[in-house]
Length: 252
Ligand code: BV8
Figure 1 (cartoon, rainbow, N blue to C red):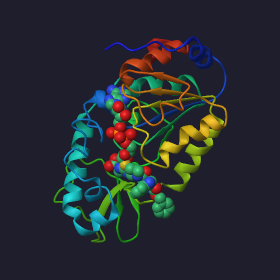
Figure 2 (figure 1 turned 90 degrees about the vertical axis):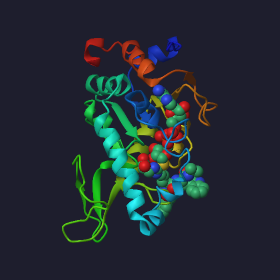
Figure 3 (figure 1 turned 90 degrees about the horizontal axis):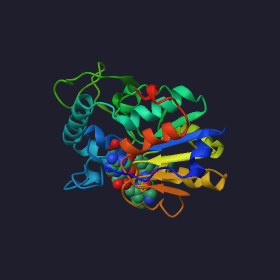
């Protein structure tokens, strides 16, 4: 699919000094074959997020919620990072000051080689004990009988942030300071509907950042963005790597 090239202004900014911030959503994993939430075929099509992604839903029907998240884990495990994830990892390898803040929980940024990932909404690959809140990494392909239980006997829940739950304080603080410091913010693959994540580009813009939106569709962010590049992240982000003068060999 074709997509417009980055503007001359953006090319100069990408080649210049000053921290970069990438803010990503489910759309950057679409080209890895993972469903988004709100697009056609999205998770919320024919499903009520309030019945799958809230603590109340989990309290009343942990099995149904776990069937959804166990399926999400299977899908994510079977997916591979796509050129969008790889391009951001290339920026982070080439530029110490390239920050990545993601709403995604699939782990594909980490598998693409990104070392510094601020996860605003947690991870499919972390489980939390409902008794003591202890979180552990768990990448098992098969969780065994659902819902999974902790060694202490209590229920385990997915280590993700559900609606009505606060974001991890440290992640939100780190994301907010990255937004305040950024010279350029690239917002890719998000419908910019879910707060407080969706408020970060405004914070960056108010602090003087140049905001770029990479999305095939317009969103509530589009009017705020200084530049919109309408196209799939897997096509556009590698072009930003080249525009920044990062040797493309490194996007491998
Ligand atoms: C909080 C779980 C406070 C993890 C998710 C009114 C009523 C009720 C609540 C609220 C309200 N107003 C504000 C709120 C708060 C609420 C909220 O914002 N609701 C919205 C819907 C109005 N927010 C919260 O509840 C947050 N917590 O506020 O707590 C608090 C404080 C203190 C104490 C107590 C409480 C928690 C938010 C986190 C919710 N968790 N999911 C999981 O299962 O993954 S939300 C879910 O949506 C995901 O986390 C996801 O990250 C998030 C955003 O979705 P996107 O990533 O943007 O994906 P989407 O499908 O929407 O869009 C994809 C985009 O990609 C599209 O634009 C598409 O065009 C584009 N695209 C497609 N293909 C491509 C592409 N782009 C590029 N390339 C492609 N190839």
